[in-house]
Amino acid sequence: MAVTKIHRASKTTLLVGVIISILVMALFYLGGQTPAEEKILADLSQPKYTDIMLYWCYILLAVTIIVLIGFAISAFFKQLKESPKKALSGFLVLIGLAAVLIITFIIGDGTPLNIAGYSGTDNVAGTLKMTDMWLFSCYIMLVLTVLAILVMPFIKRKK
Image (tube, rainbow, N blue to C red; front, side, top):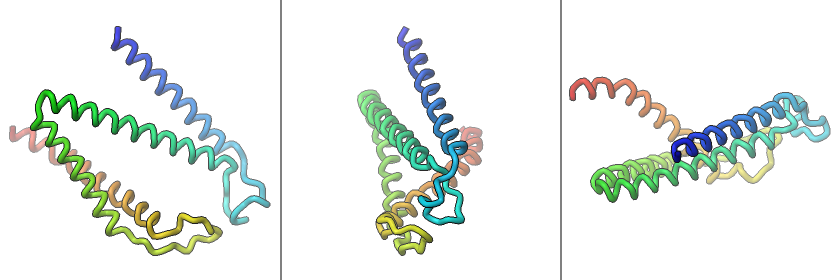
């Protein structure tokens, strides 16, 4: 009974998310262009509903992070009761991730960029270093994922 409710709830959530995403993308691609007097640069294409698309992406990112952190915390405490050693090894992975984020933030470049038509407040060292941190971390995670895909079959064969 509980599995059926969980399955129904997750299916409904996925369906609602996909429908909203399709509507937002349709608005973005089919909603037309920003009027000429409101454009930042006259010769660039500027879809009218870019803000809505970006806000939807922020909402999806925030929900994903909250759910992942919630599941990670609940799994940690569940595993702490069953096997403290495994729980601490999972905690070491989080410490490693934090170390990667700190190191990539430190090596990030904070030199302000020369962006045509932009005079906002986000072109500062802190924001630029954080952007570099996320990009470098994504590159590192991509490389680690590819290495894991290539190496794991050999490790399983040895066992």
